[in-house]
Image: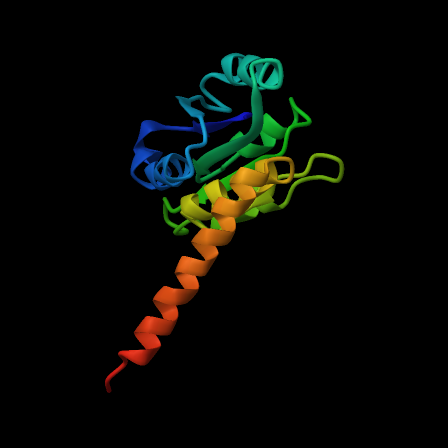
Amino acid sequence: MKKIAIIMGSDSDLPVVKKAADMLREFDVPFEAHVLSAHRTPEEAAAFTKSARENGFGVIIAAAGMAAHLAGAVAANTTLPVIGIPMKSGALGGMDALLSTVQMPSGIPVATVAIDGAANAALLAIEMLAIEDEGLAQKLEAKRGSGKETVLTKDQNLEI
């Protein structure tokens, strides 16, 4: 099975990014997490990204706040799917990061989840790997089924 890389621009992103790691563990998907900055460590970020395919990665998740150039910088250096997590931070509450992540130029796509949407980033990465992994696809179906049951139980127990 291919690994998933989780790259965060700062270790201050860890509380949110941990939700992605927890989801990947739940599905038994191998991953590595790294702190690499598009601005402070551009050479290291580029080197990691350029060698990601050869190093067994299938998807890269990149989390960054404020200017949020990390996902775009990563995507510019690989043809692997890149999923951006815009992080809530700064005076704009993450809207700056969301727009920086989602507004990529033609030819360099970045899939983007909600602000602080780490769990969905992991699920999207798992769905990408599940295209060729029937076991992962079955685990995803089971998770969706359990989510459905949770909502139906809450509906049944609703008291106003």
